[in-house]
Image 1 (cartoon, rainbow, N blue to C red):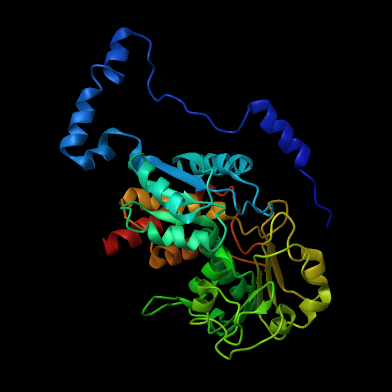
Image 2: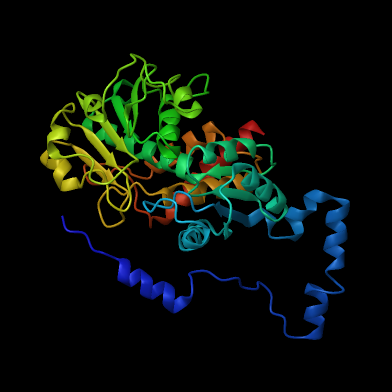
Length: 393
């Protein structure tokens, strides 16, 4: 299936508009009286109210509906480490999607540092104005360190490349398993890419840290560029070594191609053009393939179907079954902001995944996940996350 190159269209659009977002006033300021109310001297009153009662910041300011989209530009889309300035168009886009799908005001914060400690310190210092922090396109292992250390901030800090991808991938698998009539818990799942997204997907699929997970895939093989993550390797960082607690229970060795033999599911969060039809033929009957590398997937749908795949999803908006984070993060943050929860938990992520899956009433081969433009999705996700958050407050 030929795919369109959107590069020139995108360059022209960004050049014409000088970016995609802007700041707009909620209130007209046309008279001296208007100015006196919105600024000096009237503005002193809400300042004093907040100083006396810090929680009033949610009553009198933008905090309760504002998210910082924070990136260091170290892992942008499929472009890699392109730096803070080059990451701005992506973060602007993220902010625009927050507004469109959840009515949330978001702002791109692209940092000229890739040092974990400096990122953590900066986010702490800017936190007073924001109700949540969306970490974006920060490479592993820095992304893990930053997110974990900021969980005490008092507002939700959520790395979308990890958890947004995991939530939407799980939603796709819930419905795909229905189509192929397999129990998700009994499937063998191969995840290629042991960075932010891959590890988060593995954790969510195994119900890691939950006492009684409803979804607990028993056989997950996690792979990186060097092959299967196993106990026999001496080159693993702490995060990959930790992943052995919930993956590769039989301590299998080898390449991703070895792991694929007999697998029910392949999830790729790695590199373009990794697989061929012949590789899919080694998988189990009615295999599910989620090839999520962007902009070019690990295998194109036509090639995967030629190899016998039953269902194929990608990260591209111009192909069927787009596993798109926009189905997750707007509603997740909307629900978290409305509940004023201090963090986004595993239970909230699972609730979001089921809410997304439930938006597809009759899933089939080319429709296992709702459209990114389905307006009902963010509302249903927000409701599910809010309900779950309020149970644990």
